[in-house]
Image 1 (cartoon, rainbow, N blue to C red):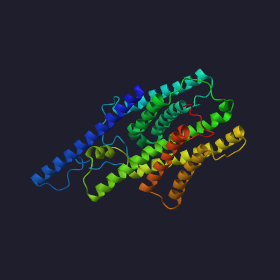
Image 2 (image 1 turned 45 degrees about the horizontal axis):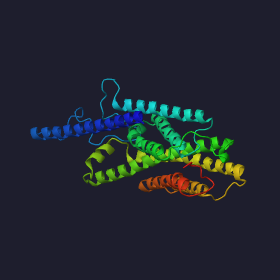
Image 3 (image 1 turned 30 degrees about the vertical axis):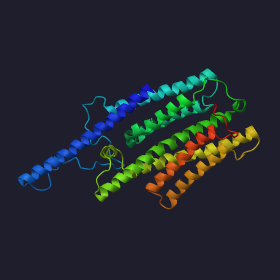
Length: 331
């Protein structure tokens, strides 16, 4: 968590630096326009001087370093943040493995272990995506926030000492298969939810800019200026949700097979099974509507968020409050 916090601070420094640089560029352009107007020069300034535009390029192919000059080839805040996040993720994955070695079983037999494994997988997936999708690098601060929150809750409220599994979970290969796929899908849903929230904020900002309105929160507006456009964020949310949905489908199928192995029936309408199916329905509706009737913009983001709220409810309330066949939280 300490190394994650170092990465968190570095991501924040990177955003602060980008905000400062872009503010300086805007101020420089305004000053230049006043000077040109004072001396009676043409309205259009020299392209070489006015190269940085008022609104940075946030298109799909835009570089996230376009408006921020490099610092002479040394390690900047973003590089340090990504490196620290990678080291912290490696430490956390090592901790998950160590838990498994200590118990001589797979290290996700209760909510604490599942949460720690899930947080590590979220970061691992995020870091892998940054290698292929450059725009993801700008979202590190917002991805780390829920990851740290999950770790704090897991350690303070759900922690359990290393111990053997309950008898119903022992000697079943489906514990490995079913839970691994569930962790991967929930990690992708977590990332898509974070991106969907940012998409809503960015959409609101872009709508105000088009209407010529002043920003309600200047600092938030400047931070969003550093992020991809709402359209690009929606694309990222859709892609991560689509992959997560495929994995969630296999989670549902593998869970049914395991239920038949454990209880003699593929489906028992247990609260956990029911909510897993509800989550599948919500995300299926989102993907279907977006593909067939052009589900775009804010409504699509709301669907991502609603789906993730169902995931959180299924993982917390169903696991800890509602009794059923899947009461394996250990709490």
